[in-house]
Amino acid sequence: MNKKLEFVKMQGTGNDFIMVDARDLDNDWSKLSVDICRNHFGIGADGLITIGNSSIADLKMRIFNADGSEAQICGNGLRCFAKYAVDGKLVRGPDLTVDTVAGVKKVDTVSEHGKVTRARVNMGKPVFKGKDIPVAIDNDGPILDQVVQVDGSELELSFVSMGNPHAVCFMKENVAKFPLLTVGPLVEHHTLFPQRTNFEIVNVLDGRSLQVRIWERGVGETLACGSGACAVAVVSRLKNITGENVDIMISGGTLTISWDGNGDVYLEGPVGEVFSGEFEL
Image (tube, rainbow, N blue to C red; front, side):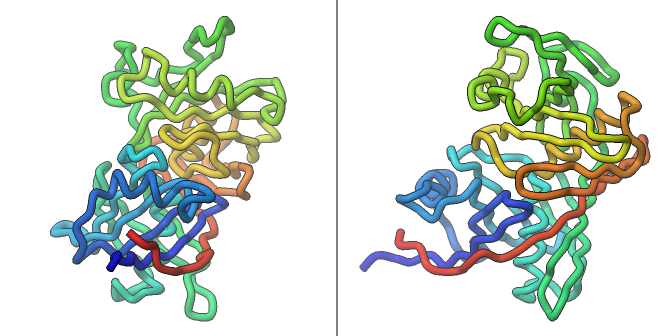
């Protein structure tokens, strides 16, 4: 008799995840993520998130991309994780700490009618040192507008880690018309990035709002990426384009990012449950 795995599918601004309570389970989560995240043959999602026990936080989160690779951090995933934990009463209150590969993160939630509808994540401080992002450039400070050759054309990329690597490209060309499906994988796998990279393309709408498309490492183009939105906001402030609070307009909706230019970056946005069920292993 085949075993069945209980799951909940959640989304944060269209970034969707399969949530599994793995506190008493053992599995090859990397392999399972490939099967379970496949459209048509599986449930379909950007990633698989497992909930585990932690000795240093309320709970532990692991996130596996659709290609089976494990990600260090995911802002939208953290918001979904918080909703799962709070709605399921795995934690006592509306706020919790989460043990991730990128360190312990604090998440505050807002509920309506007994269910979490929004969450605010402390994503920690941005990292700019080349070897720590990582990017194959020896530089201790922010690396902004680095000209990189990609498929015969030049892109001006700015690099930052929000627990995972990001390459951010501000452009005048309409991001909706940019060939992201072609250029995205070339940037992700560029020799500059020893651990590959996430890639964000950005249009400036005004001093508060940015339009963004995202190529997510190990996934492809996604409707949203929390750490990517944070990376865009950080680079935007460093370039004196926006101030402390930025609205990141992405395909799945709007995320609000706050950064004072020095300390931790905060990500806030909506979160929702799509459906729950059982997956046959």
